[in-house]
Image (tube, rainbow, N blue to C red; front, side, top):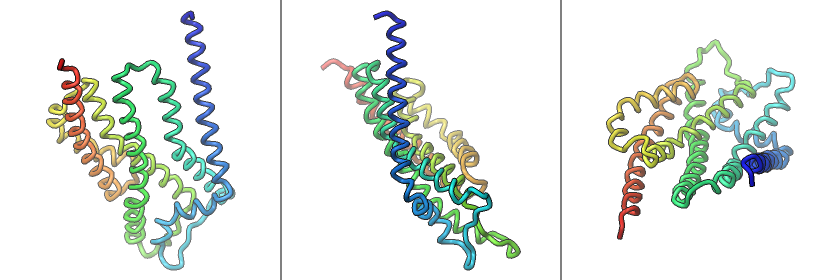
Length: 245
């Protein structure tokens, strides 16, 4: 088979994988669509629980009551379909990997998916209650607190993906160590810069309040330390595997 034919076959397979991923997302959206209102209410529980008495969420846009729940189910469809999407990426890339690379990539892929979901759950069950309990307490008495449903959706999506990807820190650290980009010792020595860096990332990815920024930075730092520990263990195992018996 010529190089051109190989390239075309790869493009056809890539298109097939992309189509399957899009179809999976659309199917999940269609399944959730009849329950879009209920799903949005569940997602809004952290803010609804701490609204001042007599307050309610509002919709300032004409189409917001329809479009916002629709966008919510689409994002949830994307999040739920993430393992299947990553599997399609893996199935496309795996044939070009060596055996030892596949052995490392499989657990890292599974761990990455798990950590992403843990980040989303951490945002919903830990960050949201703290954040939305804090905001009404700092409002001046002259202001009525009635969050807009579209603005709330934007914050929720931003925090879901921010914490989901922030929890991928150990995977990034382990990959850098295994690929020889850096060493556990160098990463340990750069700890002060990392601590400053995670607070800067927290400031950029979360709403402009110290609570959510700190609650993102601290887990990122802990996960960074976990990545160093796991990287040391895996690197040691890799060296032992290369040594002749």
